[in-house]
Length: 143
Image (cartoon, rainbow, N blue to C red; front, side, top):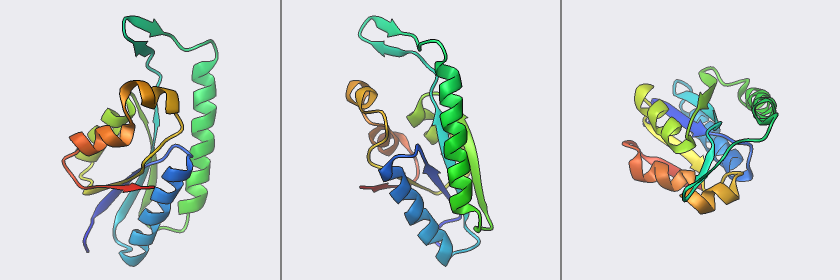
């Protein structure tokens, strides 16, 4: 067994779907490997230079609904896997992913190279780039 616990950050994007497919492929060959799929909810305000932009009214409810839909989709995809779990993380996406991986004894992160938030990615750098730089375990990026 090469990996004991694989973490897949999932936001519903095409790239995160490819990452989940790759993780399922690996777990299929090693059925005792744990698979955790994590959806990160970021409710923090966006800060650009000296300006802070708060979320509009109803934003939190919309994020929760989207998160629930993503979780349902992931559960449908991973339903037959014996050691699969889905978690919701909160906070800055890159930091939440890194913290979860460290605190849950993950030994591989598989993630997409692009998520759904292109504006924020442009402003603060991509989540995948930050995870690669700061994770203490291997990170596989799917294009």
